[in-house]
Length: 373
Image (cartoon, one colour):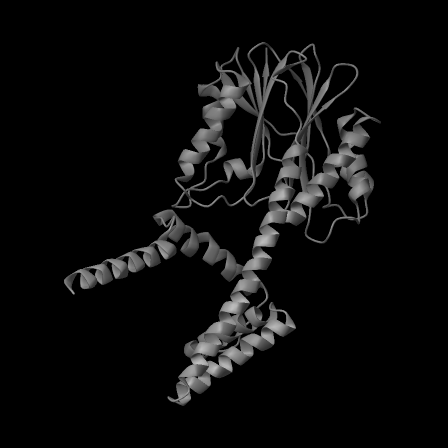
């Protein structure tokens, strides 16, 4: 009798242990931080964009109720018609169970319906996630193979998208005369739409570079090509750095952050910031875009460094919303100027990770290091 009781207790304990393990497997503080942090905030912001405004109501309580109702309607509106109906049936069953105490079975049926809908939504999400993973692999495959030493320069690059895929990209185009074109670009926005535009820009620039090596003409052709092909509120900032084997270089940018140029001789950094508006921001005046562009000429000496980056680098924030900043980035270039381009890239990437302290990556982060040998 005692043995059966002990066995029963052990089986119950194992069941409870397995049950708890099922729901707490791989659970960590970071998971809770992620759930109640950027996942919750992202979900709220998504439905907020589709919710009806509640301005004009002076009663705070009524305004709060209307706001909650508008979020609920936005949520319902994103379900497919059949799933929306099933969800409505579940709500009716819950209300009936609350109003009539002898209808507890309705709660069970509502529970089944909600779990069925949850399984369908989860399936959709997992399929989408798998497709995004494939898209990420494709985007990474489009990045150029960086040979550490080319045409008298050492090159290194780092890229981290804020989501599975991003709108940042970099490229290295090689010309038959031995020159290199370093491209860094940032499509406004994040996610799959920005990634698709980035791929379109990359393909167009590769084609146009075979036709012209003039940087302002190259950007003008790109702007003309994309004019009326970009959706409203989309634009692209681009930085182009053309390197000659003899150390001469040209830099041109279309609305992109300035490049950082470190002089080994002067042991100091300066910003390269020729004028230029972003691609996709002009109206119908094509000459106005070309007139806005300036090309800055540079002469690299041995040990000189040029750092190209997207705004996600300097605008990255930590948990108290402090930005990384250009000054910190320039200091890193100066501090590790004696290192190789690859090591400098790794140092900056590590500093960015440490600075964020686990804070959410708000924007795609990309940088390219160019060092004259």
